[in-house]
Each structure stands twice: as C-alpha cells, then as structure tokens.
Length: 328
Image 1: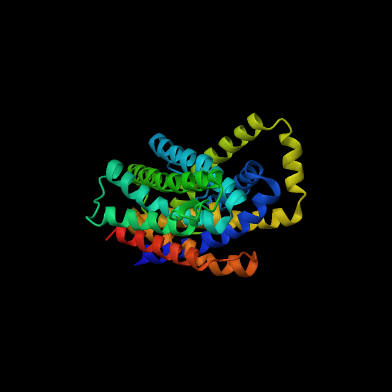
Image 2 (image 1 turned 90 degrees about the vertical axis):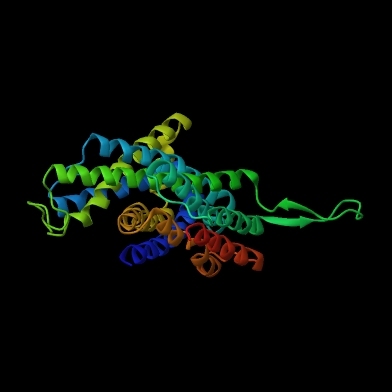
C-alpha cells in the first residue's frame, strides 16, 4: 500500500510538472529548459545527499550501479525528456501526457525481458485499450471530398508532435525499468558495504533511514548524465547556445515555471517514482503514474485556458483503464 500511495503522489507531482514545463518550454525551447532544469535539480540533490548521507554524492554506489542508472539517464532524461518537451511545444502538455500511458506497456515488456517480471493474460487487451484511448483523442472523422464515400479518419494533431510524445512515453517506461535494475545493484552495493537500509548514515546532518536517501542518490546519477547529455546536444545544435541560455535565464516568467517543473519533476517526482518501484511492482507503479493524463484535464482548462473536448476526456479515461488492465 505504501508503494501505491507514493505512486499516486508521483502522478500528482507530474501533473504540476507538465503544466509548468509547457509554459517554460514554449518560452525558452526544449534544450535550454532541460539544461537549466537538470542544473537546478542537481543543486537540490547535492544538498539533499549532503544532509541525509553526509556527502554530496551517491554514497556506496559502485560501478554497476552507475552503469545501469547512467543508461536510465540517457534513455529517460536525454532522449525521453527532450522528446517530451518538444511534444509539449507542438501539441501541449495535456495531450503530451496522454502519450505517457505508453510507458506502462513499455515498462511491462521491458520488465518481462530484463527483470523476468510476469505478464498477465490481460496484457494484450490492456495494450489495445490503451492505444484505443489515445487514438480516440487524436483522430477525427474527415468527410470524403465527393460526398459519396464514407468519412475517413485523420490526425487532428501534427505528426511530428505525436512522434515526440510517443517516444517520450516509450523512453519513460524503459528508463524506469533500467532505474529499477540500477536500484537493485545499489541495494547489493549497500549490503556489501555493511550499510543498513533502516538506519541513518554515520555523519549525516539529518538522520533519516538510508532507504529514504537512496532514491535521491539514484536520481542524482541519472540527473548528472542528463545534464551532460543536454549540454552536449545544446552545444552541438546551436552555435548561439550562450545567448539562448542567457535569454532563458532572464525570462522571469519562464524561470519561475522552470523552478516549479524542476521541484515537482526531477527532484520530487522522479525520486519518488524510484522509491515507489521499491515497494510495488514496476507495472503497478506505472499504472498509477499513468493517471496524470486524467488529473491534468481540469487544471489545463482552468489555468492554461485550453479547450477540452468530450472525446479527449473519454480517450484519456480509456487509456488509463487500458493501463490498469495491462497489469491485472
């Protein structure tokens, strides 16, 4: 039950992140946003580890831990978050989050292949229902030009935006499984070092059980790789990268939104998502994470003044229902 409650909190946190990130990404662009966001999150994570582990780095993490969490950072942050922010710019956070339901079947498939986690007979049904909900939200009927043939289905949204959003959902699911593999290696490294998960670390400023600090340590490894990746991409793709960063930093509204996206995203949301996977299965965690497309509907209409169609509400609900079926 603890893992499920944490996962539900992650869904709420990611709802706030999506709203903040949509505003910021449209004002400063995907790569500057992610570069600054990773820098902010690292500052918060360094401070957290210094307080709870006594050192400003992931204590006890060995080479295998770094390897798996670094791979997770490349997939989940560098590729996934870049695609997610590009999707927000093109099709908005509400529809972009709908595609994040793809992370659940991706996590289940990757968990089956990499972790040996069981897939239920309802998996294929859940996948079809999830995809059906997404299709319901992004497709519309277009009448034939001659008026004699049946209406055909067409995409209501730009293909490029759909591609980026779909890739973001897939990368999040795969990244979560890679993170779980890294956390399992981290647990082994802690045991080898004689550290006790239920006790505080010697020398910590704030004495909390070690198991509460480990997700933040794992997130720091992922964020370190994420920052390096985003900074490299920014330098390679934009000759005026210094000017773009300076302009982004001086945009006060964008920066305030970016602070919100950072606190609720890489700091609280991602760390809590890793903690959730320690107390429940990857599939159940992803099912609850997938509630974000439903939770975001009302605030996106009230705060961002977006028009919400009944078809989109039903589609989001169907997608989340499909995710739940996937893990029955």
